[in-house]
Image 1 (spheres, one colour):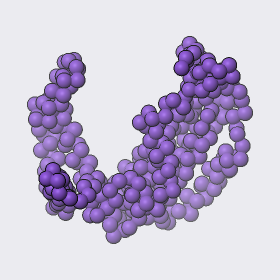
Image 2 (cartoon, one colour):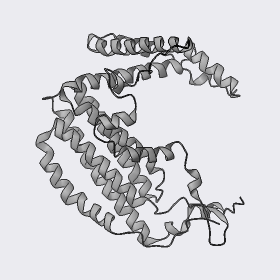
Image 3 (tube, helix red, strand yellow):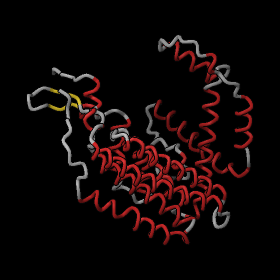
Length: 336
């Protein structure tokens, strides 16, 4: 297939950059997201300042997950303002994950503490692994250096090495605290059972299914994101997560090639309004669901003011976006 590609200015699409009406609409959508982001920061502050009703673990984990939600909404607003919609799908995917995690931790109050601690222990394990990875004097650090050399990366990166001892010692000390021992014991149990299953399989015997080791899989929890979505009654939304994953893993890049009227193939221009309204609507929806589960569980007395804010400040714009294409303009779908 012969591909004719315009110079880089054609790929970027200078036409849309110079369209005053289009720029105004991109700015309006970005401002809408920023307003919604700011309300999220108010919710986080109210949760962190309230020391009643829930344990510190639940309150802190819920707050950091909400922080990620508003950070992703903020990132999407920046990209929309610059008329670069496609990378937004990466942030929509993470918005979905944070929504699902919030619902899983908060939806069953009697299990919230245990699940928040599992999330925390998972963080500590990953933090310890990262520290050892960047310390080239440790076994894992030396192993990584050997792998990089095998890959043909001979660049001297010794200046990147850190002394991980103090950090690792601090993490290990925290993991030894009594409050985390039921989580540690559950992880050890799963690892032990999985090792037995692997041994049986190597002998040609039936070993059963490998158990999930993610933080949400502990204590017979769901093994993967699909099952986790079902667990929190979001199986319908999981379809969108799969669609977003195509952008994350670069599985749909050929969609950026089209045939022009002359029959020649060309590349989509980077700056364009395609998907923009859908992206904004989905960011608002995932944000709404995240804010709602947090308030419903942790600050129910604030729900009415949230409903009022959303109805007055967000809903009218959503209705408009669903009804009308606000980008009534000609733009080149391909450069050819």
